[in-house]
Image (cartoon, rainbow, N blue to C red):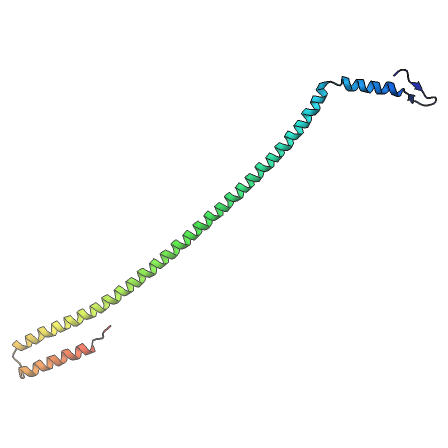
Length: 163
């Protein structure tokens, strides 16, 4: 290239076009395979990086989906536990009501039974008193005393309240 001619009053040089093109062809031929291989490696590295980015995005998406599912399952478990607690409370309240009702029923039955027992004991006592009166000297006739005792028993039975 030293054969180029300098243009007067400038720093420009006029070169022979054929000589310059020949030099460029020689450079192309002499460019080492390593440069071409480096270019291929760079392109391959770019493809690998892009694939890794895509796979990373997929892993992140799967992780987010799994986290969302786990949160949903946790919420379902909490809801189920809350519902179970509500059912247990309701069952305990119902059991208390049933017990209270059974206790009230039993108390009513026992009160009625007590009344019947009192009536029976009163009748027994009067019957014993009547027998005692038979063997005591009566002030009036025995039949009159018996009629009076029977009338008293009948009146007491009628005046005793029934549940």
